[in-house]
Image (cartoon, rainbow, N blue to C red; front, top):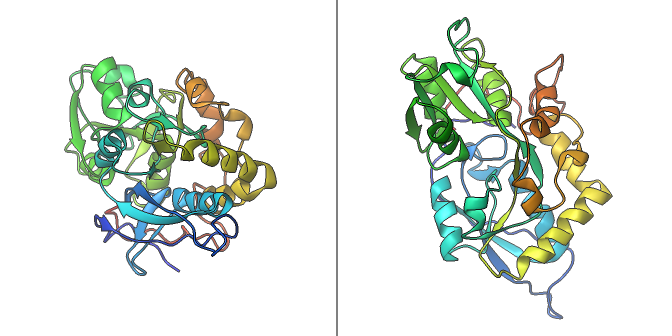
Length: 305
């Protein structure tokens, strides 16, 4: 089944994650609102042919729901809406490739980390004047609004920061030459380069931050401990590895993950590199590409995430 980046729109989708355990004596299970977005391939995106949300995060939260014993009402909103909505308690759960940060943790809670990432700089091929983040001062650099990428640029460079609600627009501005560089999470940059940006983008410099993703909960949520326990079980019984390999084409390095959300806030850039840079070096498989029966394959014609 072909999945494309085109046609992803914002909206609300109800998804039932039929659990094999939990619930009451009548077989009924609680339903929780799970916020996600549709603009972060291969973590979460809308398959425009089926009209259904798919991706690593979607498969993971459904596996967690099955393990804990609840159903999911999936609400698709823009990323910054998830961040603000978690702070106000609008959603029960948020999963959207969200980096665990001290600032966010002041407004809502995080699960234990479930994915190791980091920021990377991308430029047009043949770009000679930008070889690292030190070279972007005074230049136009695009990224996605309300993300750690924007914060990093504003706090660590004198670049002119150009933001978009959709990261694909940031990449397209780079491809069109309207900006000098783009910066975003390493796995998404690599995936885009291998699908939509072939020959038009390349990464430069080192991984800039050590970041890990967590599942978000309103403060005081009773669900967080159950989800943490489910994550531990899925990592131990191989379910997490199966989902990871399906989307990224390689085994996860669980040793890279911090033990707690608090530990994940104090990582160094090198903590991200080993987990993700293997995708770029002498691999036949790149972030879900070219994997036999891979559900993220053939994502190559259109580029509106």
